[in-house]
Length: 287
Image (cartoon, rainbow, N blue to C red; front, top):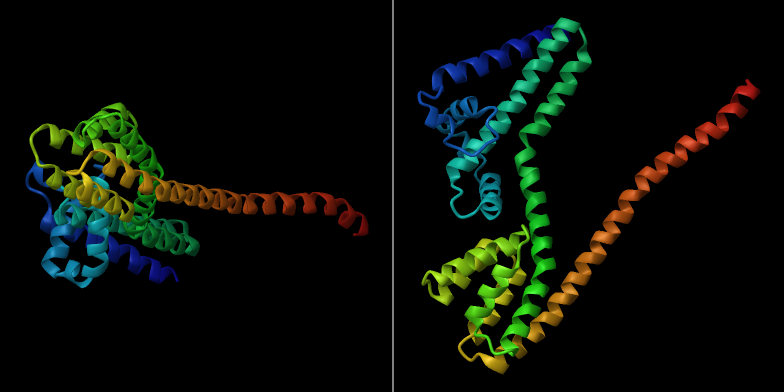
């Protein structure tokens, strides 16, 4: 086993050194060519160049495309495939570094378990961007569904009071000071309307940036009824509001069920500890 640790330690270190020397960034701008946390940008750049040269990104095109779509939703329309490649290379490189450090630690300490732990930790860290993006997109979706009924209710009130749809959207966007994703997208849409973009174009972009089915339904109602205005638009929004409030209730119920299920494990652990505490004296007397 010690020989395997030596082989893995030397091979991983040699690979990391080879990739960095061959593809190291020549300029500071190359280090920042992707969005990252700044810790491994230089090495991630070199690793990305190596993967591009070897065509490895093409071999994982499907999961990479899914990751890119999710990152684009989370980070905005200016997120590029280059940014996605940089992020994957960054986490994969960090995973390799964890494995190399664990292998050398196992060699020095003559502890086989260190290699196993480092390999598991490296594999988990390398796949972290894929798992994190899926989780964040789902959280973003739930946040948008939760906030949408409030916006629709505000539109119904303002339109019923005689405001045009444009002015109602702008007022709601200016009034919302939160940092939730829907408020952010609504402020962008409001800014675009105020700077002369057509309402149809703004709503289509708003729908794409949100990437949620409920927003598609909302924008469809607005686009079909905004020219009519007045009572018909308010009525259509009021009907949509009922269904969106039901969605919000179902999301709240789901979150409540998840919270209660998470409590099961701590309670089970506490029960196990209590059983040990109560049973230990009896077991010691019997012995």
